[in-house]
Length: 235
Image (cartoon, rainbow, N blue to C red):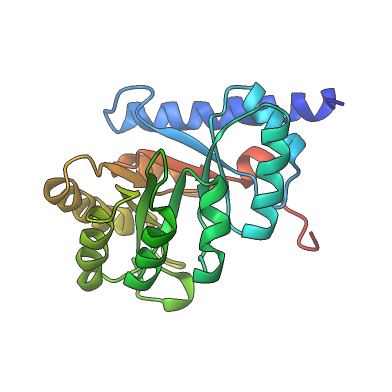
């Protein structure tokens, strides 16, 4: 049963987020609609995904396979088919599960993971879109490849049957001006698109720094808190 109160709450938050994105596009001299909103629905129920889909959100993101697989199945059973993004650090033993529901894996950061995805994705009717996660702070705990490894991973994805290299993803470093970090990402993304035409996706920016990401060319922003509210840390 639809919760009208929750729907109204999400509709109001969605309007505010869309306004922020639109203003950021104007400030950056980019056309309206240049940026796709990806709703980060981790820890939130499938009912919220269904409400967001009903409000016109097409892209949803999750970061843990166990939660994502069950949620995607519930949403699918309801006859709703958003574009699912997997954005968390992915263990190779979870690859076969993730590719059953994910349309995009944004967090590929090693040759071994790229190889595991390629092996599992052989024979897919629609290639799995892959974004290579770029480390902007060289902190291994936060995932991502350094620029030295980026091109090896990118080339491996681009040459794999069943995968399609979509572009890059990054998270702004803690304690650093996100604008400076996303400016570095923009240079990397430009080179990526030059070497791999068609790999033009730049997934960057979250609730606290989406404006800086849009200013520096993000095509997708990953929004959780500003859209769905503060998460309960116990969930």
